Length: 117
Length: 114
Image 1 (cartoon, rainbow over the protein chains, first blue to last red):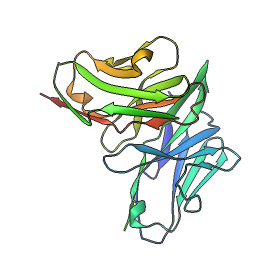
Image 2 (cartoon, each protein chain N blue to C red):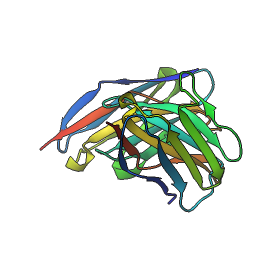
Image 3 (spheres, one colour):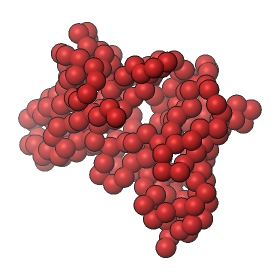
């Protein structure tokens, strides 16, 4: 089946630095990818929709200058957390939409744990 | 607008007992509905989805869910719980046809007691 891979799975960075998380669709092309954030013991909150070759669409309340999303190819979207602060520590997870048969489906990556110290 | 309500943040069942995880949805358009499972420190895995075909949907690992429009529900069931079913389960909804925005419930943690 379709596989979505995220890298790194865990990252620790210093406050004030930037960190990039990659989301790759391994055996299909994904024109649309989604980025979610999950705080401990909470549900997933959609941050932005990433469309290949165009600007990402951010959800209300998500700082686009802080969470930079680039979808440069049909198999790769990146999320860069700029000037990270401890409150950005969270589980970030991407999903990719693939058209299959009569409809679409989405597959999730394994997620990336970000800890800002 | 769409939303999902999962009743019960924690559910405990004995091994071999029926699993019932409740999900009610609200959607202004015909919905697609999903159940995902998340094991500790892992991403989400799709269990099953309803996309306006059969109202009783069978998924992986013996799970199934029934779409009931009159009750706006999409409860997840499994006849006999296994220890390996212990995980967090998320119900989700999106507008039909597009996957433009998937809204997740707050999750239900399933504990299976030996």
